[in-house]
Image (cartoon, rainbow, N blue to C red; front, side, top):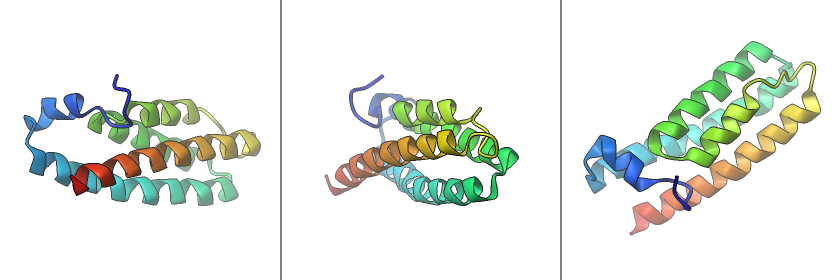
Length: 114
């Protein structure tokens, strides 16, 4: 795992290191981060365990796929949380995911600007 929010060496295994393909994939993931984290906020309010697990599972896979391993781990840690039985824990997990997502988004912005 890398010391950065996104392991570009991992991503390069799928893209051959093509900077334009990296950029395209990272742009897509950047948009997904905000959308999925926003979904989790409303899922906590709805106390919907099934949707919570679906979205956290999706974040986990997408994050790991692009090499955002810390965010993927935060999603894996959040996945078994039940927002209906553990709303405080779900809120904490959401805050961790937001923080990890912001770090990944800042990394992506820097990558795209370079």
